[in-house]
Image 1 (spheres, rainbow, N blue to C red):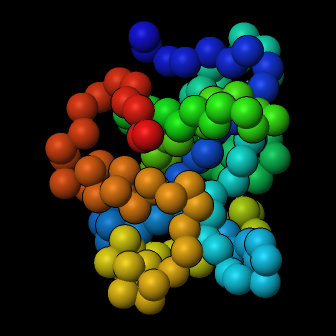
Image 2: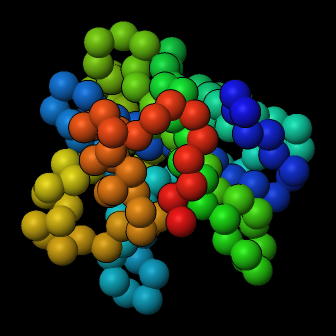
Length: 150
């Protein structure tokens, strides 16, 4: 499958990255008063592809410049949850780097992290498999295409 298509309940979780420093941009949320670092959750429209949903949100809503999305898609099913499947995609800028205000485009509190910094800080991250997914991406051991993160 080239790109998953939504049934109307699925969401895509775009992960903005800075490849040169192996960092990802995360947003803090505070479930149960404990800070958890996460990525945006973008509802997919019926029949919309994962890439199209990510680009729609990041370009139209967050007003980011041109994007590149590698052909790797992580899939998390949440049986019994209100949404269907969650897809995780890596997003790079089409240019060499993101504009300086990219953090504010997602949220004023957004912060760049490496997976090592997150692990050393004992930070909570959602989705829980995001750090392993990113390490697999950075180290090149994840194949292109859709893979299960369960």
